[in-house]
Length: 270
Image 1: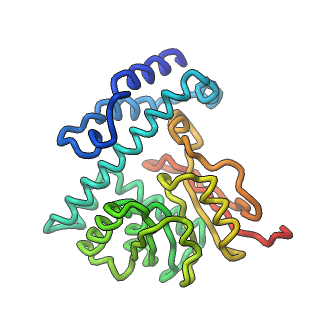
Image 2: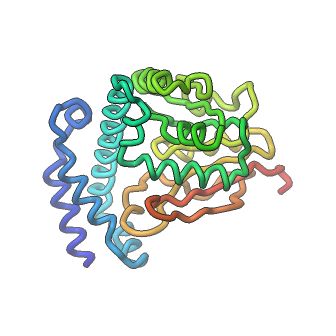
């Protein structure tokens, strides 16, 4: 099985190694989509964790996985931008949002975030790396009446997300700030800081949060614990810096594949 998986990954790498970010993001034809379908089939395979560990430890495969993971991330951005633009231009923006293939996943993730952090109505959360389509914040607002602040460092994505929120009439519930993690903590209070999957570099982000957030502040992030999806979680969270302490994990239920991890900033004395 491992040799078959490795062969498929090498084939994908060979076919897409010359694709540029611009080609994936801006070409009318979706050049990466066939490779994404193959990756999704691999990700859906039932595979023992030790076999995944063996692939992760394969030094010859690491450059291949890193390259594919980068292209996969860019393709995800393409999908979000396209859906954001469709929402902005639609006479039925909520229907256009709900038609997004991953929308059910985000609804479940919002429920996991709300439960894991003990959020209440009118609480405020901050999402680092909210992107052009801030679906997590939208789901938390729409289903749980939670206010949000998205922090996005790309000006184009930040502008697009503001237009999405205006189209959905959520621009008073959710604010988008152009910036990065160094803008935290914000002057107004919040109950949870969510570190997005595409917010990088994780080590630097968590080190800053550990230094600057007030004691008692909760943080959440998402990881893959099972299957081949672990391969592409390249900038994953390692050991949390002190005084951040993990206090809960919520394992996924279909259609979600992410585990939600919750931490809190404790007193320096533990």
